[in-house]
Length: 407
Image (cartoon, rainbow, N blue to C red; front, side, top):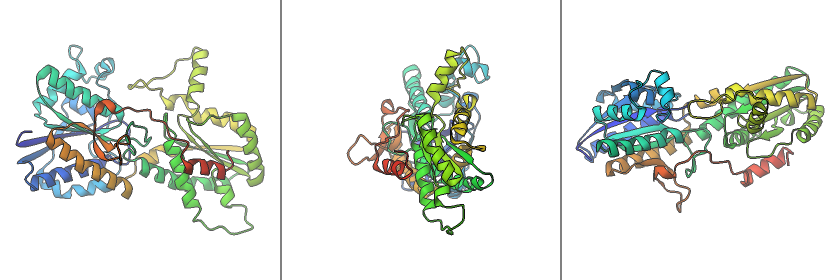
């Protein structure tokens, strides 16, 4: 690697409680490498709004006078440099949004920008799509232009669904924030007789966040004191059902079980993942010749098909609810600052990531669950893949389902 290291950074995709912290930790460990004499000089170029910034040339250089103040970003939510949903291989979308002209591919435009900016190392802070695209970009630059850009990915997603990474950044924080969210929302069960509360957690294909949020909430609930004789109780504020994509859902059977709890407590609380039931809803839409909304990444647009409405219509009648309340903790949870667990995880990955970059090794940082001891390392990009399902066989999850009477 050259004596001067020009580090590029970008955040991409949806928010997660790790973006600002990742920037802070990477700047910290690159600065430490400079002070230790591992590199001779250093600069940071931040691309605004992810791949959009790379394609349009929107970026800025971080003044070295603020390197020692960068720690403040550890305690901020959101992204300090902005996000966007842009896929370099979706040429039509990039042209339509004005990021590239019709005579140039997004990959070529991005390559030209990184070469012009003389980027030595690119840190992509995002999900599996963001990081695998960066790997393709690095390969493209090498094959088409003979240049080398080391790519170090930082795996951001509250879904915790990336192979072969044990724990993605921000997922733990999001679970605890979702628990805090519901700790307040559950009080709405006292506002109306026979109240059905549906708490939607993020998770397109993985039930991890729903399950982890439920566990965190029940841990908080276990510490709450109640006064005997009053209608609000641990039972009325507990979770009565946890529905995730990985668990088969029999709505009539669940309705029968939950009606008994509605009769007993006067309310029912359900946690469900946003991707739960999507397959069934999409099949119904296609059967009725309805257009299925698709986003730039080729995913079904969950916001437009609204699984929450599907559940509320079916369940409210089965349990005899007088009022149904749907609350989504996603934006609240994903926009939080990283907690101590995630700051520690991100810091350990950033440290190894900087070391790997100096050695010239690209990869996506994380605990490699396929290696003995699950070491933190730059995992080969070809092994990075999204869509990892939540392991429902884990004992803590099975115990929780038994405790709430779902199995």
